[in-house]
Structures are given as structure tokens and as C-alpha cells.
Length: 101
Image 1 (cartoon, one colour):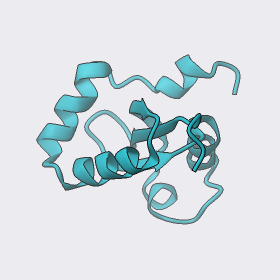
Image 2: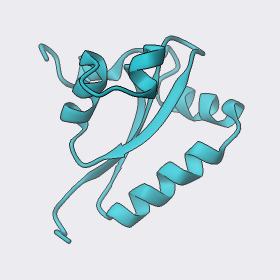
Image 3: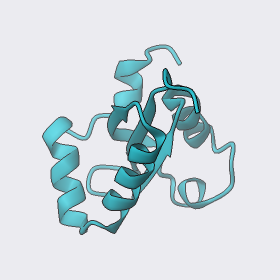
């Protein structure tokens, strides 16, 4: 395992207070881009869940996976509060973080 990697736990939404999806990746640009373009069949493509509304980064893949599993078990209310602690307007953070992509 490489020590210099950054891992991201992220939450996507279909719209404000819409359908949510929680995932983990080591390449946030690529992974969210895949969700946005519908590259992979699955939940996010089926329900139009592609807006990056929350993310956090960490250096240990095990911690990232554990955090993803923790968030997935949470009540929707807790997820909403987590999103709004970082992004009260539910903006698509992808556009702000990676303009022109």
C-alpha cells in the first residue's frame, strides 16, 4: 500500500434533499466524472445521482472505507446535517473544485 495516496469519501445527490449516494475513491475527479457521464451502469445512473455535495479526504484507505461504511449506516437526517455543515446550499462542489471539467 502506498503511503502518499489520498482517499475520498464522498456524497452525491440527485438534487437538494434528493436521493443520496455515498462512495469512496482515490481519484475524486475521475470517479465523480464517471457518475456525471453515466459511464457505469448502476444506482447513480438509474436515479440521476451525480451532484457532488460533500467529501472528506484521508490518507489511509482503511479509514476511508470505514468512514464510508459508517456514513452509509446513518439516518438520512444525519447525512443531511453532514452535507449542510460543509455545503448549506447543496451546490455541486465538482464545478467549484474542478472548473471547466
